[in-house]
Image 1 (cartoon, helix red, strand yellow):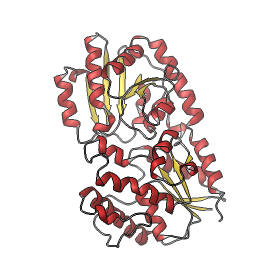
Image 2: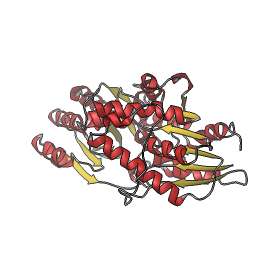
Image 3: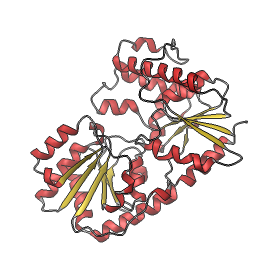
Image 4: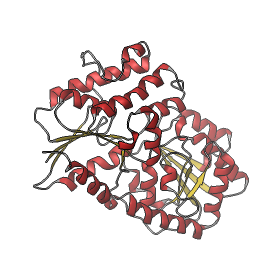
Length: 374
């Protein structure tokens, strides 16, 4: 069976898709399976000139808005690059981004399409203050879910929470499959270690949706309570300067290390003690599974896929979003009691190996792919 995994970003980019899809390839290399990856390079800009029409809604009612204009042009560019680069046929295409799926079906209308939706771009834009909830750009972006449903032969969400989120925007939500991302266990090597001072780590894009302002306030509260820690922030993004300034104003700059973007954080994640990320929204939260496989204690918010990964008090701690005091209380529990911290970390690692292994994801995908004629 000849498979094409259609990404948007190149596979070395950070994020849930890149945590899984490039590692699928070696698992599918056998006489029975042949798999290729496809993505659009960042340098491709303003090449596409196609007239764009969707089957389920008229996007032109939103065409005066810059977010919509950029999205449509990116879709045109993806179409242009697909036609230029793909010269062979496939038995099935599995797309991992809305633009990739809709474009692939336009170019290869007779090829079965499986579409995984990994995140809610519109929700992130709202939380990051880029668009208004219920506004025209929001309406355009959520209309794409119905278009994806129409185009795809199978729609997949990465968590039950995200499946529920999609319900108002599609015609048959009961037909959406749920397959969480899988992670290659060989990439994660927990290391026995004892840090005299608790080492907290977070890995994310530095944008408002990730709630790092709440994390810094919680850490300031920890300092007031005389709890010793070091906070390591891995990632980059538009709000880095204001986060650094906030750390100074809260008098925790010396306890906080900003690393910027790092390609493979899982290589040194096992040396830390606690993974914490107080996201305001998360379709799945891949980095929690990666931290669990690195045998870190998990502290997260009761949102989206995070609350499916963490059972509060069993394999991590959950707190409400936008609540610095609750986050400080949870962090204090794991900082002050290393034995409890280790117990949570072991449970998190066991659950992640069981529920989020690459082997499990591969088996589920193979069963799904084989349902299509080839």
